[in-house]
Image (tube, rainbow, N blue to C red; front, side, top):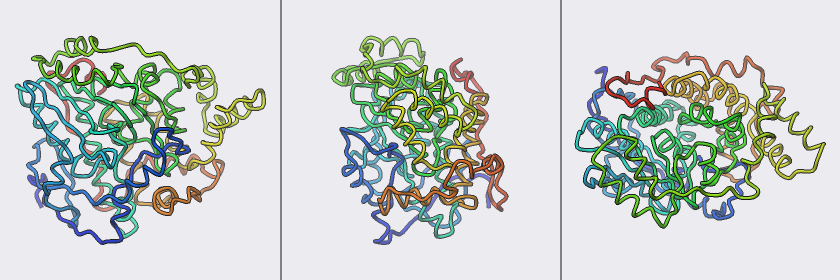
Length: 453
């Protein structure tokens, strides 16, 4: 077997009973309380057909894991349509194009994005990349039910391969030598965050809704979240990652997840101007976006006004202490936000909460590549399911049976020891498993990229 694969050729068959589970998303917030996006609408996404990774020439410096069984099929016309690829003057414009599924990232889309970004970085005629979504979402997440299905059937390494490719895509975006402008006009969750927040510019609008709600699913905020959430002011990253709290565009701008706020009515003009750029200089690109930007006002009840309370409670050493401080505040005064935050934490997977708290604390001292390597170890342990089955139980309760009543095991925070958490950060002792391998990033990288390494 060659050390490096020149071309990935894979194929799949779809059983009728699989169709309703194939493209489930990382978009569920802590209580599924989307005023504009009711849960009944989200549920319709789960019935979409499978999506496939086709054959493509592999960039030489990206090492893909070898498939051990047929898992995907050659791309059909419908699969090509999942990602619209355009060249407009000196700009590459990429559109996530699965609006009925809220632009959920399929395996094909992730692999294609990795291929295009890698190829375009070496093309001197392309100065920047614009990434956007078609419809009311930028991207609501990625596939999890397929991962669960294959893991239950004994092939957890299939899920590991999906995460392997996605994390490499995240790393390339985070260390990209050219400006990436992500237009976040709608829902941005889970894998959608990884495909956008790592880029140089993140443009939000009045329609933006952001969340990382994975702890409610027995998973954890990944795709490099341990890097970008740990860089937020104070302990806001802990709050966002542990609770899955929703943020609007103004809040994203205030906390630093977004770089610009542009009204949706101006997005067409913004894109037209960006496509006329003849330089990869980020200062020049930023100046163009500035012309269309506004400074939005935070809503009266914005969580960002609670930064003092968040820092006081979420700075604690353990999840138990965070809950204890919140409960003490609740005893002092009646506050719906405090009560809701407590209930959200108590409903989430105790293991996921403890793993993520340690992860984000360690992530503050690591580069983005190191964060992704650490996240890959954790996610492989989770999909292998040898320490906890919470991920499988979360998918059952939220995505399959939809009773929204997961039975976590261990069921209480105090039953998850430090040694239990330690195991998720260790290398897997499994034949054929390797740590996430990321390429060395050298050359003329911008200073904002070098700072991430």
